[in-house]
Length: 235
Image (cartoon, rainbow, N blue to C red; front, side):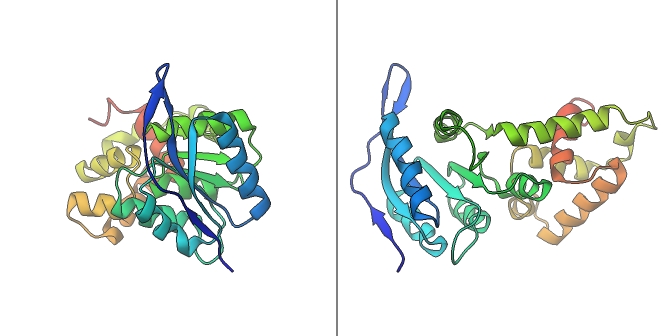
């Protein structure tokens, strides 16, 4: 049986410049983990856990009912994967503040996060202080990348920095590809980019593939980092 609990009344206040009473949805398929997560947030005092969901298919319903300032969502959920839920929420609510919790620390997870439009990503093994920090920042609309994933980004950056010098690849990047790179750094999904540029998602993916080949990069995370590192040159 699926479990869905939705609270009433939503207030936002601040104390000492910090957000309090942050309406929050907690979604995870494991009851013990979900209870522990909610307890940590409640004990901190800044979070109002107004909805706890153990079924991916019910997260969308809970979100529309609560309209929270923060949605903490696990990658792995029964019925519907968390990454799919995040994309669906953001498609309807572009200002949604979503913090994703990952079971794995591989490149695929990082790439999926970057393409989802969610604001934050941490691993489920993260320290409770990192969870609180991430939750507060994402609730304010700031981006947050957990320590383990930040290390992955840093390693990729070092790998690129150490590569042999070659002809400037930026010169081969077309105007349209530059536009797509810019939108990727803003956290937009392929669907959102397609809508903004009046092209199809398939065309966006084709441009992304061409960019990876031109710049000799392996994944979306590397593309985003390249665009941020070469922002002025790409203008």
